[in-house]
Length: 127
Image (cartoon, rainbow, N blue to C red):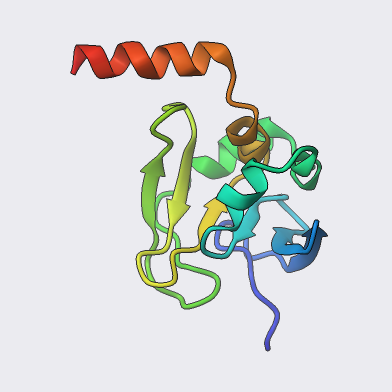
């Protein structure tokens, strides 16, 4: 299989394995590609946040990039917002269901804290 390219900066994606789950991390911007369900699986695993070595400030810059294509199937990805943590914006492929997190976003996604939970409860009440 050919080397995957970063959908944000076109850097090379390298394989990173945590507890038998293989994800692809950009060697340049440190964003992470998760195949379908890998992010949710890793979110449940203690210590999995160590795969996200990127600087969140770099991630914020790359988050501003508008349209990106899936590194696997080249389909235009959809911008998503995490329901429990509305400050986390990631991209999801509508075809292969993979997701792209910019640097620092997976660590933030995994470390959902009490204030995020309260915010999600109260924002649902206001809808």
